[in-house]
Image (tube, helix red, strand yellow):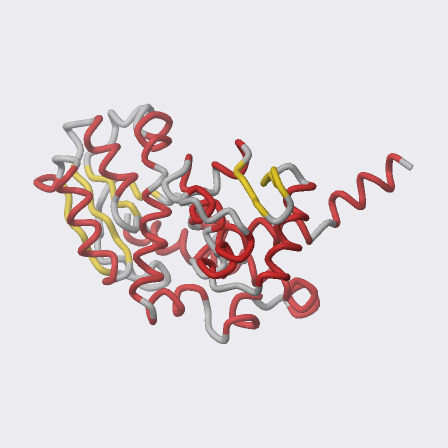
Length: 261
């Protein structure tokens, strides 16, 4: 019986999707704004009242929201985490209209992925993840902002590494430059270059300037499947890149870094 419970808990798709829908509809923020009554909440969220009530009652049963009176919903400590600006920007990570939420939806194609070996994102959305970002500047900006949320980790774990042997660090696929800005701020002897999509250039410039390292760091547009635009640096940094690709493409990315070095 314990094994069955373990499997059923692991197989549950309802709770993960219910949480993502609640995050996408910004239910926690609407409730915090005083729209806890089902009718007002449905109007604010642009949702069907009956369907939304069922969703919320499921999440009440899971301990996420509360229902202090019939049809009136409140926030538990867990639901507070789903508000805009909450710890780790959790709501943005779960938002099904955002870049990570859209990627989560591609898991619905997992059976076809395993059968064919092809990526699930284009099966679900009609084009690849990076093509999706390139076609939608707002989606790309949201992705850069989420990746920029790694600042605390970068400022401690990454910047805390021994960089004494490095002089020029190239952050390949470095987005808005958050990681590299933290490394450069902690190690004044370094200079750096962020390599990423052209759409990241403006955001990277702002991040590098705010960190006070713009005089030691530049941005170069590039594609890590093509020859890199910066050659001869002593350190090429890849963070949250290789795991996105199959072995063949991962090797291609690493080969481009080796060629550039």
